[in-house]
Figure 1 (cartoon, rainbow over the protein chains, first blue to last red):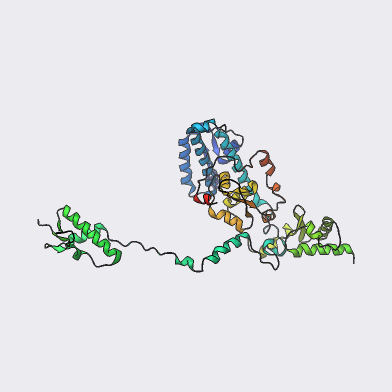
Figure 2: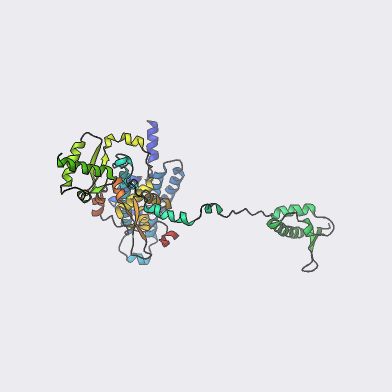
Length: 246
Length: 192
């Protein structure tokens, strides 16, 4: 008994406003009779309830949470349209409160129908056609395909088999980090002048180029901090580095 | 051999062996001489009383053989179980059923949520929904309509048999263009 009460609480999302309080189904009823007063619904409260529902919904029945969110989104949207009414829309006759009621009413009708449709006697579930299968697939001797099969067969014919496996493989960038270069250079910096390139670790391709770049940045960082010296005699001369003379 | 019995046998053969629902004119065209098809079917059904199958008018002037629901347990055990539709797919299906022909963005407007790509595909794959004529509006978007297979599946004679169809029509709820768009516009809408 205790559990049942708990279940029923969880199954219904209660919406609370100054103007109104109750489960979402009742809101639908009110919207049907056009008794929802949008102008009295507090946006802050609505957003707060939004958050609470999203938090709770993780462990609950998602379809209920989804319904609630659709309704609440509608109210937020229409309310904000009332608050931020453009001058142009003022002239248009249709008030937004009616639009909410209309939308909710229509959505409710569709939801009710969607719930009642599977309750009808269904072919292949409650009763069966000759040979037990769906007529459309059992027309004797004929190739029975639907429009869907027909259209989806086209790309299958166009794209050669195995093409899907030829998707480009993107390897992650393997590059050196400046921090790593700073610790590497500062550890290996000799007291005599040495070419910077000799301090670059052996590697190839993109990794090598990134190592050269980070080594240069690292040597400049060390020079700025007064731990190293960098010199280059002419634009195309090799860059020389050494430990700073204390 | 009574000629009446021959007519009944021919109609029975067509309905059971035909493998699909037949219209009265289709049946009448294959009878050796003109006869009231509905009367013959009534006699056939009288024969079937207490048996496991029956002839049903599944659409106006259109007949098909069906197993009796109370005798269908064996069929159910022999056949693969039909997959159940998700609530979203069912709602989309009923929007299409009520508002057809309806475009994708109109479905989204009625439901207030964006339509995920697979939902329509499933309904089309099941053969319950098919593309209809293009709408004569900017971008000439594709419309969607339900098929006869949809009517057969849910035991609907016509679309008017949909739950509360009359009430919705009276209250003017069946205009997909009414109301405000809320679902986000996507690139794919433009292509359609």
